[in-house]
Length: 285
Image 1 (cartoon, rainbow, N blue to C red):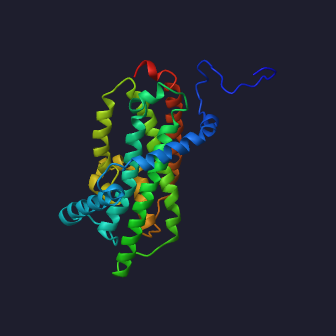
Image 2: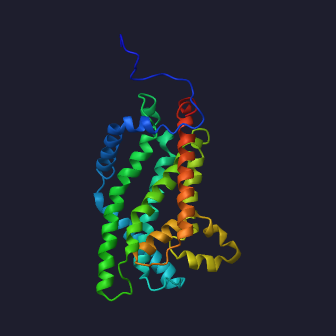
């Protein structure tokens, strides 16, 4: 523009090593909102049961886990109703799994779009995580309904102030799942078979994260191999989430601090790797 030294866009060489790009993400916030609306509208648009899948999937999974681990494996859930315990675990696990799966395919699944127009690519995985909050909210409402049903039946559960921690655990899941997904997405631009490894790894991670049983039970059964659960941040996030939801005051605050630091670190590393990869990925995808 004549008479002005300010430009709307600038073409620059590769920037510094650590480039989080938050300013540009904020500038494209309208596009982020548009992607979120698109994801919400289209995800179940052409399905027979539509949003009912939000409810059917966690309920059926919780029933199966309860039958297997409570009735057959005789897992000790303490005073918590086994079905309610598993429902809380499955709800948060599904949100993590969906975020990680969608984030890890950001480049390969959106090659056509990324090759036509420029915008900060990280908006896509962030929009998926935000739109997934609607599904999570619906499932949490179902959890509350069953929670009230069990209280009415005389179950040994009572609401507690620890429920205030629930949004914090959800935020930690977003940081951890999107951060790991960004790293995997950058790697899949060169190593396509990583997508298969992610699918297999998620199936295994569900059990390593103590989704269908308490962390304390896993530590006791695993013995010297309990470190698999001890150092797994997702296991502690899920365990803390369901303990808070079920009214337990025995939260592991040192573990919570460890998870917070690690999740922020993984997210920042993922963002750095992703931002550097987006500058050259079109040559390898």
